[in-house]
Image 1 (tube, rainbow, N blue to C red):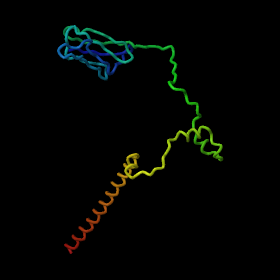
Image 2 (cartoon, helix red, strand yellow; image 1 turned 180 degrees about the vertical axis):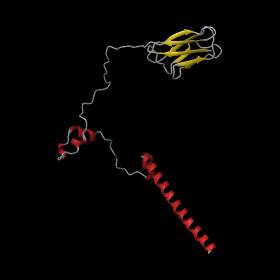
Image 3 (cartoon, rainbow, N blue to C red; image 1 turned 45 degrees about the vertical axis):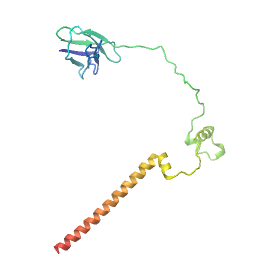
Image 4 (cartoon, rainbow, N blue to C red; image 1 turned 60 degrees about the vertical axis):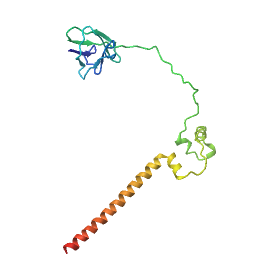
Length: 183
C-alpha cells in the first residue's frame, strides 16, 4: 500500500488532485488512479513496483514519480504553473451594430409619436411580423406551451374543488344517516 499527500508550496492540501499511472496497465489497457481527499491525502492499494505515476492539478506543474518497492508514504509539493500574457485583443467576427439602445423611459414617454427616437423605430422594426390569420385552439396551445400548462393547472384546481365539494356533500349525507339511525 502506498500513502501520499499533495500540498502547495505553503503546505495547503490540494483537494481533488489526480494521481494516475503514466502508462496503461497491460492486462486491462486502462490507467489506474485515485484523487486526493479533503486533506490532500491519497492511498494506492494496488502497488506495482517501479510503475510510473503522475500527479496533476489545474494551475500547478505536473509531478511524476515511480512507485517504490514495498509501498511507502510521501508528501508531494506541487509548484504553481503561472503564465502571464502580454495582452489580449478581442475583436467581433461581425460588424458592431451602432444603433442606439432602446430606452423605454425616454422612447415611450415622448408626447409626440412623430418625435420617437431612431432607437425606438429600429426596435419596433425588428419585432417579428405577426400575420393576422386566426389559429385554432390546438395550434395556439402548441405554439404557447405555457398556456397549456396554465390550462392544466386550472383544470386540476377545478377537479380538486369538485372532489372537495363532493366529499363535503358525502360527509353531510353520512352525518344525517347516522343521526337518523341513532334517533
